[in-house]
Length: 603
Image (cartoon, rainbow, N blue to C red; front, side, top):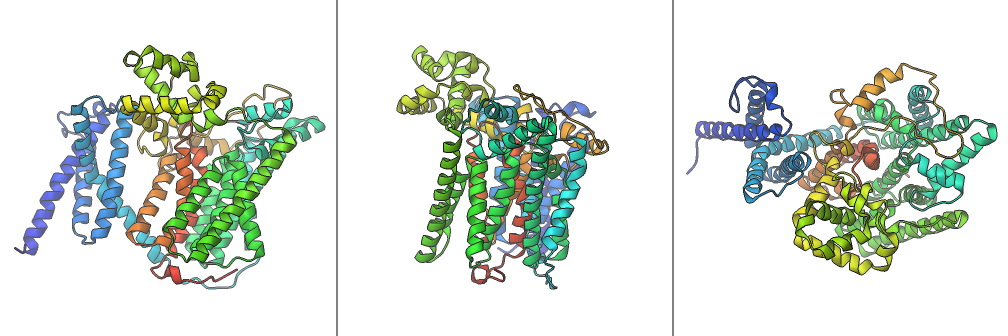
């Protein structure tokens, strides 16, 4: 029986009304964990709470808009995205505030109900986000002609570099935090480890020794900071130049340059001595070559191959997990791409060449420094160690003394008692490397055995340790998006001394980096925003069946997968996903149904 227009409209409104109420009730349950309900006067779920009223109106309006659309493929893609977001909100909240997702059958059923309620808002929101990708794609139909200025790259490079100078003068000679003191200890003791990228350690060590020769290590280290600023800004300028060569609309190109030059995160990272910055620069450079190869269908020349391999090797030398991400991503691309056998062999050859060159370069660095590998097993299996530590910490009374002692054989009892749900460093740092190496099969058996007995604890260990990457609400100290902003002691040798040559940047940067309380901009300094952006891009490519567009995001996705195996979820690990955002926008802009037949426009 057909429903007339007036009845259908009334039915949509009733459904939207009901879904809006479910959305608000579910939000109130989530907000109760934040103790926000005491911030308003009134009784009941609504009372005089204006936020509940606004949430209900917004949810009802969005759901009504969604029901008016007839694109089933859009609805299905949005439903998956929305349910993922709802599950992230619910399970992240329980993991963070209760630290126990699987309390009881009743709680699990309640969580399912709350996920369904939250999804009444996140599904239509996801649909709106996917439609924004559509709008960006339509924007690409604008033609952008004109002569190519050969000095464009150098002009943009100079502008971006100049934009970073004020914060460099404010925090001169740089922001030496994170692993800096550990790497400098290796340099000063001349005992190198492969735990940190050797190339990065040697670069910092060279400038530190140069400073020692000058009699002022701060002066020496300023040149390291300037070099890092030059490399990062050059990578950004090359991306802008690539967009310029590909005739991207002018407004988008200008926006990309402003994003690289003025977004505070880039300036702050440009002066921060962590391997993740140079890795992000080389990663962006490498992904541009990947886009040129997969998306633009460009035929590489000898110098293009040189740039491809050089960027890939430098990328892998700056982060130990980059090669795994590139290898896994390339294999997945070869499996998914509809290419002839000859082209797949070509892709496999590029991967083999990159792996070979990276292996040779890494072997040369190890031979030159006599570097040792003292933590391969405990570093690679830090998450299994975290899972075992959680079982030993929370289920001490439920496991046998034999199993508990076996767990303690792999990591000290004191470290287990100091278990931190957000940080695996507590248990991996002093784990028994030799025992894991010699007794590896038994270690795996123990891991599987405990996982079979306590699967809930294993799931919660992964959830709490990675929630900084995907939980969109507030989180704990170790899942923070803030960038550390102070000097750490070198411990050995002369210390780097901070001097302030320009004070006004502090008025801008400190509220963002220390307090993270600036609306919108503060939230953009959290990892999950950029990860969800990548996620929605991949879902959009599936929704629009733009396989060539989606394949360009596979290697970044695989890199993110390696981060989920890491010891902690922090911003610097996924900074590389932030810098490729304008490139993803380009792929969306130029993506068409005929993109697989597009030939190269430039070489």
